Length: 304
Image (tube, rainbow, N blue to C red; front, top):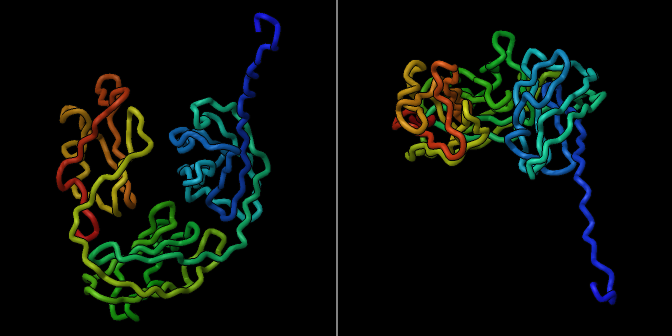
């Protein structure tokens, strides 16, 4: 180059990736935001990074493809057919940590033309069967968190259903029995009485299942949404709280027992542990690496 026999090779500066997104709704309680490239999980799952005027967003979940985020609206803010909204996204980061400028996706139409289906059923406890639906189901007239037990028939009606509770953004139903399930084969029939938020009744279906007792204790297999005030622990199976609300600080803490949790929220196979952070009573997680401790018998699975 110095002798003039060749021109210097100039490496062009790469153009910054401009992240864009599209959004659509195929049911009346959820929005699908599809980014043009993979996004950072922590920022993508922060529901405060999304806003719709006069509508509360209850949750955000990044899907396995790394680009699709499912936004679930608050139950009472479910939309009507052909409602149109504008979604503002602010604070989501690209996978490399680059902040994305605020942008708005306009004229997103809510329209549901698909009849819901029961995708799967599984025995998850000594007296509990979990049914998974293709979309959020609307609670019965008495409660938003339950479905009518008349729409679930176990062993042809020979086993009696105590209750049917919704979880996981109303897409899963826990069918609890009055008595323990006997080891071996069983059937569960889902009738068409349960409806989605568009008023479509679920397609009736019967599942043949096998009851196999689980004798292994639940284990933590990962975490998500870690911040200085809370962290969500992921377990290898659905669990339920096994300690009193006022005692959670004795069962969950970080660093040492002087930093107790203030409260926990249990849903499905996840436990969100929240810590106090008032100025005069600060129990926030430290910056960097933190250690969260879960004491024996803090939770139990549905096999007790």
